[in-house]
Image 1 (spheres, rainbow, N blue to C red):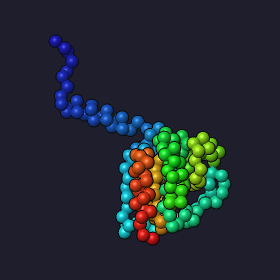
Image 2: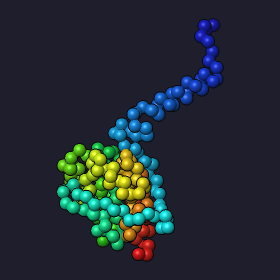
Image 3: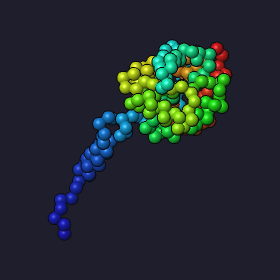
Image 4: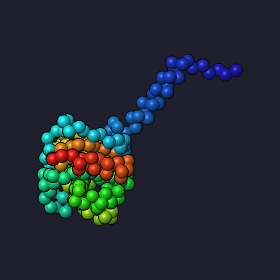
Length: 198
């Protein structure tokens, strides 16, 4: 016969709960992975026309050092993808984004926001390796947080990748937190917004 004291149900439940809490708090940034960014679930959040905020006001410099202003894209749908060269999901979805940008030339514009690379050269190398030919705003460090604030709280600052789709007035009309589930998901949103009046 064992000399161990039998555990009561509350004790076992307490151990299980402690284990779950320990596993949930494995890193110092709650809700983030080891890279310090939040991984979204890829769900599309569409915003009704009546609920859209003012047009996004964001200007800066591209990774190449050229000036860029989202106001210059008014009149067409704009896909804004927040990325970082060391983000696995960003790497995975970049080929699809690049392909869609080519297929939708003249119907929608694509702009990246590089938020975490320590130098523009890292971001440029990433774009070159993946054949990305649309511009990306270089907004690393504090500038990254400031750039994302322009999206009226619709983008979580540490959520990479995140894709915001702006309507023809430059307002946030849809957001995908996390990797884009499929090209069809993205093109369906673009087509819907392109068909809107104005």
